[in-house]
Length: 214
Image (cartoon, rainbow, N blue to C red):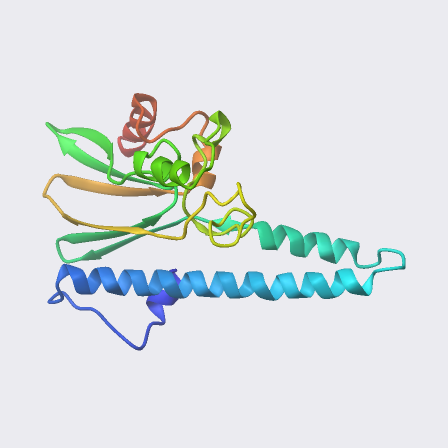
């Protein structure tokens, strides 16, 4: 999405723009990134179909390439973008990445999550999925309920019973306060590398407080 923001020559933003204008700018960049990913998936689905037809009735000389395409087709990503304009922070989030804010309270760091996580413990997303007639299993609780790609689970493309993902972001605006010190953006991949790390637990707060005090 950074690519879409950096190369968006059709529109620009300035410190004089209101919140709605900047929200629209972020949402347009997200939509462009989503279109790029979905277009790439459709191209690879077509390539896979051609190779599958080509290998019918003969030894699978294309199997390795088909397997590679299948992995790419099923891939996906969450999106978390933070944009600072003067003393304002704008955030676009789609998925279960985390945005942590480290502040200074009485000369001691304090770490808090700034955004709601899009997973199946999120009441809004859980309601959306159950209203669609899908069952939320225990294994799904920490999975992302929003994201780009993963067509086999996108609500508009998946087979019945599998469409639990949606590609709809949330946008937020915050006023940057004097006690703000750091913003930490954590992808789901980073979270998986930090054993038992959850941005809303005391254990994670202690971990990041130690890091910023080094």
